[in-house]
Image (cartoon, rainbow, N blue to C red; front, side):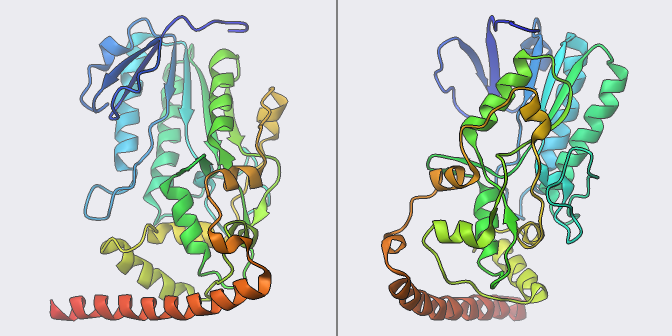
Length: 324
């Protein structure tokens, strides 16, 4: 497919039509659309589906992703596509104390069992690999991007990691952030090239979790035992008091940064560093411009208020539990 040109693009999603010139767009649930008609005459299928912040009283996080992938690939096989680009996540490697820094594409997939999103992404990859064996004529590329964000666009993964990092005390964990524009360029390369296989997508290097918080102008961090934090997070998640799923806590406590050497060797060049990508999605609060002494004074006050909030949330939850 070298030097190929895209003749037309067909898109379908739950979101409304974005109004992009040259895009034939269909709004609807992929599990209900007539995929055989939509994929007719399609050469390259780019599957970008991802779970969108379900709460625990709804479907388990990411469950629909695997089901949609099954249905989509079955239709793709009948339509005779020649190329598939599948969006996964670097979270399929899991966050474990013994993880090498960085992880490569050869690393084992060990998603945290309590984190449905990563578990289902790993399941998608397994199903796609099985599907590929039955469709040897189809070239498949799987992308595993790290936490991704863009200008004023911070997804639930980044928000969850950021929230959990506040409770790591002085512990420092390597973290990575990828700009959405760089992820888009990686997808584009995979569409128009002859690449096949699995590719991590991340900027060169990483920063510490403490540095990420400092870039936001924050200094207070609470050191909380993991068992207590897991219980509190489960309560907050259940009652929609915080954006952090209990399963994501380990991704804020242990390393899961990745190397993207394979994709770079194929011609991909990110335009944003890890720091630039992170800053692009976060506007520094007013206290970010204050000197360190003044920030410390404000931080101490904030830590006291935060402690009162934690106690209040725990007491309120306990009252609800004992009333049952």
